[in-house]
Image (cartoon, rainbow, N blue to C red):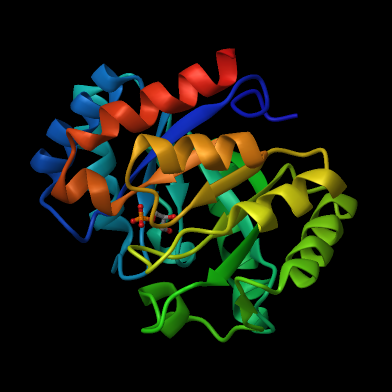
Length: 243
Ligand code: 1GP
């Protein structure tokens, strides 16, 4: 088991290096830490290169002691100053580029730079009328919000393959988050930690996802637009896990 995951219910803050200058990312990370977030994820579908990731992580590390996890869109966005990387198989993509090719390029860098890999099964759940950015970037075997059995099957596959966690992602700023019923169904079948993100914008929503069986809640867009709301989300996660 990866030391970072599985001990308690957690919150991860997602900072997209493409959305603000590094200094601003550092300021945001400081607030996330003050509010009780457990880690900073760095990534996004449109991050252009390694330098952009590196400079953002550099400022985050100057301003916070939280572990930094790369959430890569390709091997080219892996930076040596990260602590962890979500080494992710896009479960519902048939595109070998995102199941094997980028991994082959990235693995040797991860090893050389001593970044700890977190093997992850990643699923994009389609809950929006207009495709989210990740849906426009990847070729997908679409999982709609009522395709519960398909999500469960992919999750079981990930666990059998030895992956350390599963991430159910509705994409950035979707119409709706991943449905509670889907999280519950996945929880019933697997024991590895479940990460849930996309469209979680308040404490009530975060608590519902934790009660359904999520172990980690990820918030991204809210941090850029309305960071004060993060406090209630983190409080809801911590109180749900202690009750
Ligand atoms: C996207 O799950 C993350 O990959 C976060 O989504 O930006 O909607 O919080 P939001």
